[in-house]
Length: 153
Image (tube, rainbow, N blue to C red; front, top):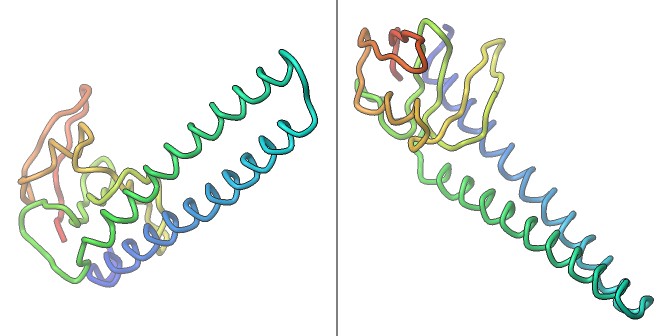
């Protein structure tokens, strides 16, 4: 563990960057899908035309849902102040355990910062729910694994 407050700030910034990159990527893919659907309507006829339009519509709906989720993740991250530390696990806490390191923020997944790996998880996830309100040295069990909290920042 290096300088813990700076790791927390770097981790938060990395998660924000990942969320923003995902938003930009999804917006680009959505725009391309909409352009392809528009081209489909101009060039096809009959049943093939309707099937193509339906598939394009489903793809657009799926991408729109993913974009909405990515925007929610970014919104949740912007509400976290990474300079605040707490003895108890709350939204925005970085937790070191004997089985891995976690960042209670948003469902982003594996994030590497300064040669350490963290799992950015939602407070609503199963492990997130178990971690909330826990303190250093407390333990909990999930899926047959026993976790002990080594540090909370």
